[in-house]
Image 1 (cartoon, helix red, strand yellow):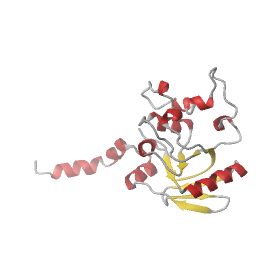
Image 2 (cartoon, one colour):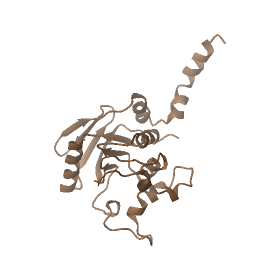
Image 3 (cartoon, helix red, strand yellow):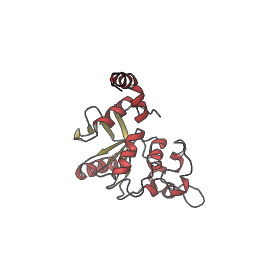
Image 4 (tube, rainbow, N blue to C red):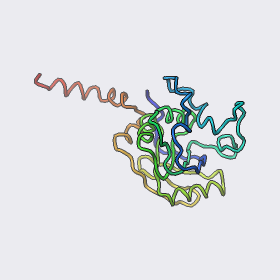
Length: 198
């Protein structure tokens, strides 16, 4: 399934300075029955966002209109726990196109890259700088430049580089998932197969 191409994203950010956010908190297990990727954003952080009677919790950041944007800034060890890919689906479906943290669980990070959410790992010091900047001004913008592999705090110009697998980087820039990538090089694959002696 193709997704939005990712090149340079400039956006304000939603801060979630909580460490060890696991995938059951991102999308509770009771919402995993669906097999299509749509609709999971409604239940992103469901138990943190809503009371038992489905009324919004006023003190949770996604319910606070002060904060908005396409970037989620999370605490250390974001996406730990089970390997459910629905967690990444929920992040994407809600409208986030990047998650920034000082550390990601490997499986969650891979699931994000597979569906068009860019996980940007920064130093703990830079993460703290970002949190403080957003606290001072919720409209603070970050620029995430995927071709250059940099994230910049626009208000101060502070910048860090981040790592990403070259194959996944190319796919995100082109809006490809793994199947789209193979379809895009179909002629090359066919040409190679035609040259085989068997």
